Image 1 (tube, helix red, strand yellow):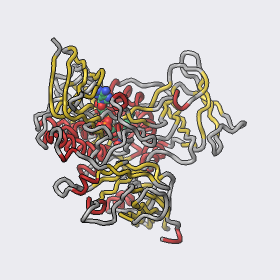
Image 2: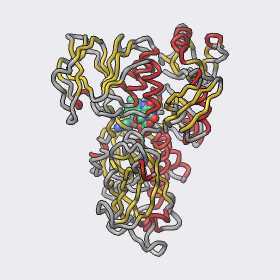
Image 3: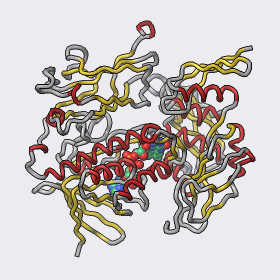
Image 4: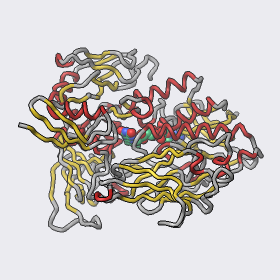
Length: 123
Length: 450
Ligand SMILES: Cc1cc2nc3c(=O)[nH]c(=O)nc-3n(C[C@H](O)[C@H](O)[C@H](O)COP(=O)(O)OP(=O)(O)OC[C@H]3O[C@@H](n4cnc5c(N)ncnc54)[C@H](O)[C@@H]3O)c2cc1C
């Protein structure tokens, strides 16, 4: 049984309209302007994955929040669970971009990393 | 005694546009002073914690803060330092040429003189006063950018149950952000028949979370005493008038406005820099030089860009041009411009630059590729052709200088054409002189002619 899905690619601002045919375990993507779209569309049709960007609480600085991201994609359906897991995380300076602030989110093998520097001198 | 500082180039604003301008001016050998009113550089990127920046410039998806850090690193490695928490209170042109800015920072007042000025002050958000929502003015009405600042920088939630007015990208981004933070987002209401944000944001910010978008619909009234208790929505007709009988009351405590951005140009106005009524930013030539000699502009101060990458690109150009202008000195022949209008023809919402400096185009030593940024005036879903025609008479007539085909064009998605200087140059290299100017015409391709 083959199934046809119409998707908007989110890999870049171009936002290509993709058509994905899923037949058994195989997905065929058309409408993509680049190879990234083919990979994304095939994944999206079977199990949508997203990068999570959010913030964590800061102590010991005039800044209140530090921006962070998941260092890889996680299932769309787990984003709210991940937010809950991140809620208690608190960081203190110094933190540098790329530093891991929480490891192995929800046991998915993906870390949460800082996307900004939080240095001692921030008032 | 009041402090006095003198430099070649002053850059106003340290967002991506200003930092790119400052770096490229320093790389061209100019002394640069950057003036920024906030306590950190990065501009609006500091609060844009989502990713999607830098794909064109760095080949990868960065978050706003990551993009801003790259600018700050480059600026720092060139020895640049911004004057932070510094405000410009007034700006004037000096009779002998150059500019004087009266500024204030934590150390008090100071005067800043320079040969060239780069305006990189970004844009501001339209508010409900500009879009006109009837009713009371209870607390709980926020622009999308303010809601973004509250959540991402201050760590405060604006409310519990939100309605979004408009479908601009920042509103869509905030619909997702508020949902992730545990707020309930009831829906987004857009008065136009088409969404104004990027397709990818409709997908990843609304569809991912099942947030409905109502098109041809608006918020007509806000209810509540001290705090918003609800809003009335209605469908609108083709002239954007609410259709009687379609009103619906929704209960919510927050209304987020995402109804557009306007270039910030108070200072440009005070310096007498002419603006383009279409973009609401200064009219510039291909070197981001405004009609006032020595005043350059870049980024969202010129026109609202949807990608930071293009903002940086315009900053690079503005900075290197401002440095060349400053270093050339008064009376230099390279300062003499020969400006020819570049107008938005049929099908084109606007085009930047609005002017071509033919003198710079004809000078082999300076002539560089010209970046044209434009938006179509309507959705052309089955394909479009953008044609740069000599002469500013709309329609046919002028010779075609340049042509580009697109799979589709939508007004929210800005396009950029990189035109080799030779394709626009006049003089011996090319007899087909644009003469009275050139215009950019955008025509849809009907499905059958593909
Ligand atoms: C609320 C908001 C959210 C946005 N979100 C996104 C997004 O998610 N993705 C995206 O691609 N684009 C977004 N944009 C567009 C964004 O503005 C551009 O991508 C880019 O940041 C613009 O860069 P800029 O340098 O032109 O302006 P900005 O980043 O706005 O920087 C302008 C700088 O000038 C300073 N300034 C202004 N006036 C003065 C003055 N008189 N004196 C001294 N300093 C001054 C400001 O403090 C600021 O630091 C957003 C815009 C806004 C307003």
